[in-house]
Image (cartoon, rainbow, N blue to C red; front, side, top):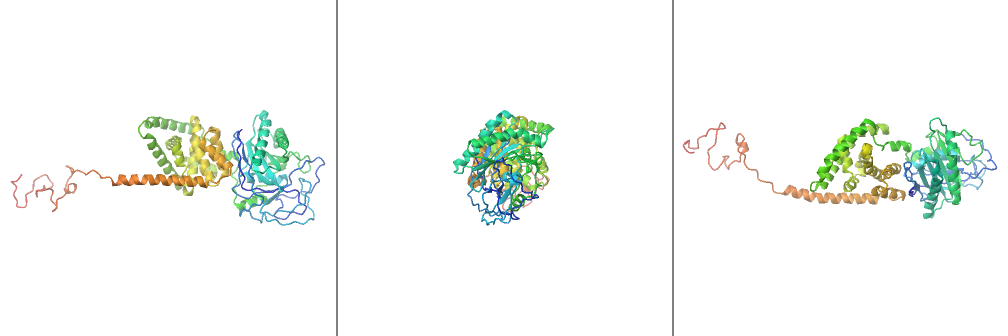
Length: 541
């Protein structure tokens, strides 16, 4: 496992149970429960947290069993995101008390905080906030989120597909804990606590409770791995089949054995704040990966046949002099034409319907030529120049469509279009989609340098604008180099066209100063007969 660190651009607060009655902005959207005292053996657990409302918050989307990815750089304790409305997020001045799963209201006063934040209370709201924290629902995944500072702001995070081999669970747990905690230490933000999520849907014949029981050893090992590094796990949740269970709370009065239903989507305070801030949840991880999955069935066989034919035609062509430059030019010209075609036809409907429309816009032969042409590094780098403005959206659709065309024995050829899709997504501030594409590219070729660099840049929280400027400058230099050559070719002397001997009438022949056809004044009458001169003499030949 090769974990990469990534910062979250926003962090949230996690509070102990407030000693004052919650305000309307902080009240959970589900009906309040009757406060219950925790059991005497109840371990400390989270009672509330504040979640970011920044739509560009860092997320983790590696494909199982791909490399773990972490968000590990915390944001300063006082974020100033203009998109985080205080109408949804007022913080509380809480008196320290023992955390419990049921918020216990009291008569203590509250002090308003200048921070714009969403305060989450209890495991129900923590479970509901997970898709908003990541930008998607991480099915079949283990997610660990660090809490930093005295107020427990959301900091780093790590996500990995749950290994199917249970023998790998101890090593995976140790490495995930080490990755998340050490990444925070490198940035002087050692986590104060950690929240663990285990997300998996039931298999055939299973229930959500069966999933919870089956994953319990993994949850326990994650808790002990974090504890061995002196960082406690305040809450460990299992999310399955629309319900959640807590591995930390033994009190069945607040955490029943059959699980607790998740809140209705879009009805929580977190959902309202996310909608106000423009955050977008892109469905589940499986749905995002399906948009990049290769074709299957008859369509895959047809595309593979077209790729074979294109490869067979490309090999002898590359043996000619200056063939590489010609192939690069033809590939980029074809890609530009396809982007123009995609721009003229913008589909609507679900993601699946839009992808089907995109697939219909490009033929198997065109896709084959582009896929093979993009294997050249210089061509791929030039194609990366379509990364912003009006070309970004159709370019992203084209790269996704090409990734789906890499079927059968050409699966590894998808690395180039997948990397381009990840680059355009990152350039257009779609971090979750970028990580999905780059993770799939690295799963196919872990040594692909461009994908590695982009993946590391996203994880380090770098700004893509310097790379965009570099590509724009590269494009301007290429254009400035090509224009003089085109002007020189246009100004080159053209060969003089010799008068043709055929053609009827005088239009096809150069005319003399008075409209004559040559040095003499004799002409033909159009029927091949010699006409008389000015003096009517026909004797001159």
